[in-house]
Image 1 (tube, rainbow, N blue to C red):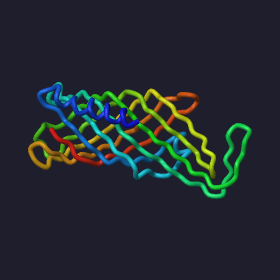
Image 2: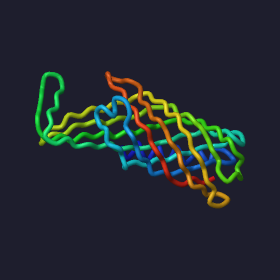
Image 3: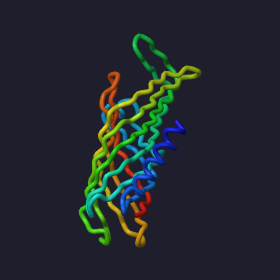
Image 4: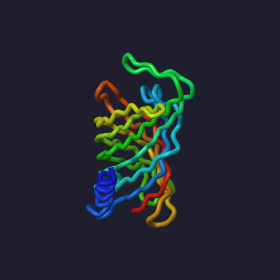
Length: 194
């Protein structure tokens, strides 16, 4: 996993160097499970981070990539869990670790020097999902790779000539693989540099 994160970070940071002008962002990510993900874990997640690298191909369009990591957790005390024909009663601890890796395209509505620069975008790529349920000394875990799409909206607030305060909201949807799909909204706060 460390190699994957390092390789992704290296790839994304090099995107800004490929063009005359690029954007690099680091964010703190929070997540809200939706759909079948919320059926498994409904708790809001305060754990996550992300990195984005974007290169301007015109004044208002960027192409790039993103990597993020969101952790979802929920404990269920004194409940019964059933998988297949087996049932267990006790305290259960559920986890989902989601690692979306996307190629991205964004359109910016305002000029570079606007007081707020709004954008919309779409990411397409793959998401690695690690899902586990722990009970006493037992653990049921599944690892999945999914094709995913990630539409997002965001805004950049300039701090100075090169630095920006960065806000975005994304819908991360991992299409069905092995009879499971995953979806969550992520709310991202951080800094971006030109």
